[in-house]
Length: 488
Ligand code: HEM
Image 1: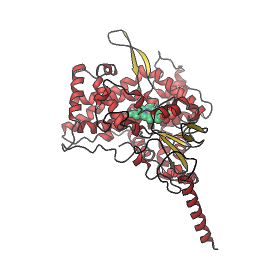
Image 2: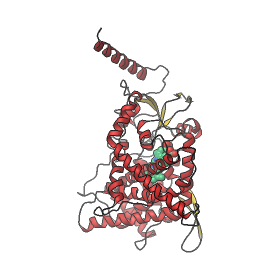
Image 3: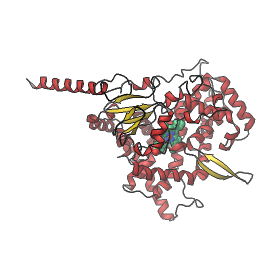
Image 4: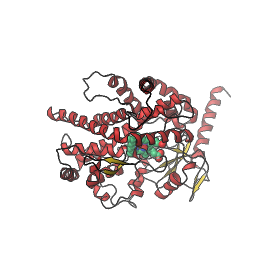
């Protein structure tokens, strides 16, 4: 037998073995799609995210349990968090975080430390910094829209909304921003904006090699080749900001204190925090993580908002009337208006219900064997929550395919509305911070503060009060999820 025949026999053996293992495992009670050898369901799983109830599939080498029952999801993500606290060690995560030094991908003990730092930072700086930053970015976005209106040009929202969300994060984390006016020559715009966009695109579309363990070195090579330079750019840019911040903190010798002008931004707090190891790597990693997770998420939801407003003019009119009555056009909206504008609050919930930007959540790794009902999850399996399926299940929602904000007016349906995930490791942008705020009539008021929802609320209210949104040709816009699990 020559070498080529041996090679062919070996490959065929591996393919058959992989096919049998993935499709005929007698212990598996869960249904799932037919799996290809090696790849499993990797090529087509997005299209079937609302077809099954709970199901299993193989993402490459990873047996993956996808849950679509809110009770079971609570059992796993909330009650048994200790067994499902980590994310898988995928090369893409490793590459972008320089070895999982961040919040989103870190292993439990580092995650606990880093998440605590950010959660505390939000409570420390929210009053002083975040709301005015969002308000100011809303003004800049409106100004840009006005330029389009004045010149009678079509306004394509996606990139402007991305810039809006990116600037909110850049200002909040580093006190820097990308100007809206593309003619302005600015270091941030040229050196940070484009590389960040390319990196988002690569992470957003996923990487097949990530899920096939023997191809991990190839995955690293691909990432290095495709966006290695961009990532180096971003990290060295953040490193410079780190050095600048350090200088300020050192020379002024000011301790983090809410009464002084410190913290100026989240980075001041991130830099001053303690880390169990690799302090510098963690600081840079957390900085870039926040820009990554805080940009495409909010801007995608805002893009869906534009699209649905084109297709549902009556909803737009109703929301506008409410805002006109409560806020009017003589002042900018404030997050404290939310309580008096229930229809707009419901409109936002409906957008996040019908088009959740993370339809299958973000994967978690099972740390020890776990059984729930007749579903067995093995140590090393991945678990996903099928947010899309829950948000479109007729058991939990009347006419789930219909866009209808009214459904949230009398019924929060909180247990089935989970766009931000659940449990201790849910989205950090949705964490609520209760704060005492002095209003302009000099009294204290209890406010609920949530980074992601406030950003979306302020953007939407500002836009609706100033513009009527229609499609460029007056036709309906395609609002299907485009058979994709990724944001538009
Ligand atoms: C429409 C807006 C957003 C949606 C729908 C959203 C949704 C999600 C989801 C589903 C997860 C996965 C949670 C899990 O594993 O259970 C997540 C994680 C995360 N999100 Fe968001 N997100 C949004 C905006 C933001 C913003 C503005 C920030 C900025 C601070 C942010 C920060 C994070 C972080 C840091 C994580 C990782 C949490 C961890 O691993 O501890 N998100 N988000």
